[in-house]
Image 1 (spheres, rainbow, N blue to C red):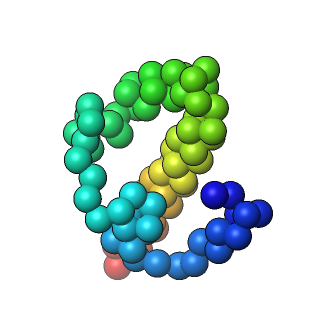
Image 2 (image 1 turned 30 degrees about the vertical axis):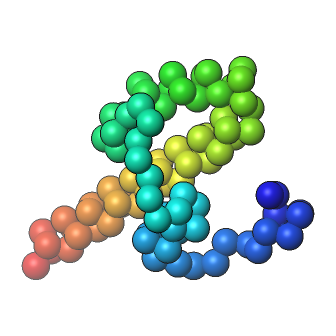
Length: 89
């Protein structure tokens, strides 16, 4: 269901709540475990296949990768700030 069909906008929630809302309580990997599935090579291959077979899934994959990259950039930035703060004291 898309947002224009009545799905409420995403509200702040914990990681567990997000997973529950997006996937459900149980997920049993069909092919890849969580570490292999999140590897960039696996993501690229699945994304490219999704582009041709299920473009909507490719859009979702690209969005998830984007937000993962934003999270990593934030973590690196916060670590740099902490390192600078410690070197000043």
